Length: 316
Image (cartoon, rainbow, N blue to C red; front, side, top):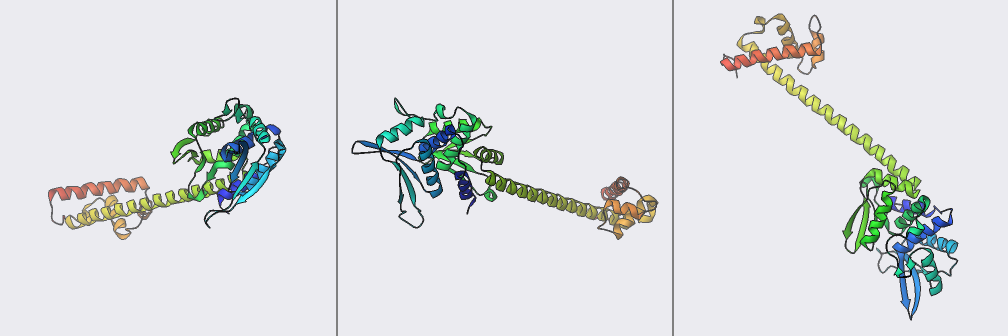
């Protein structure tokens, strides 16, 4: 089961304990999954979802908050790629209108746009509303493929209302238009984690955090390896340059004409081309530190440069 499916399965099992929270979650599910149908002058409410578990939760919430007669049918997919769609219908107009009014969706002027403030007055209800919106129209990608969570809704004002609701939890969504939908989406891993926490998807949150930790460790290891490789490359380049300088000095004037402090470190470098500066310092007598070796190498480099500038025999 993919991360998206596991997340929805987990959220389906989160049943609000308070009636106000049940109203809020069901209100979001009706806004995202619901359709008002009119047939022969009679109105009915239909909620359609491709996830059987979400459909079962809709039925459970309807029975807890509405007590209406509910019909459940399955519409078979026309192709192998398109699965079944589960239809939850409230066939009686009086029941449908009464439920829509209780959910804050139906008012004196007809269908209310945006999120009904009457159903999200308390913070617990806001959490339930967000959970319902995600169950009805949400998607989250596999953590290993990046961080992406979205809620796709039919119109921009409703998308902006959801975005504003998420901002109350210090989550920072963006909105884009995709075909005939407005998509409220998150790309930052911290925002995705926080939304999972808000919706009470604890298992999914832990899975994502584990992925973040593994990715962070892998990135740190890669940075350390790259840094070490860069340091090795720099050391090899410096050693080659130092050996070229020492060989030039040897051909042009001989190491015997150098002060012993320089001649000894020059011989140590020629005999140990792969040694670090610290290791070279241990090879001379008396031993010197890395900075002392570096100082002597710079003096040798200046001597070699003067030989090059004068064009003395042996200078290449």
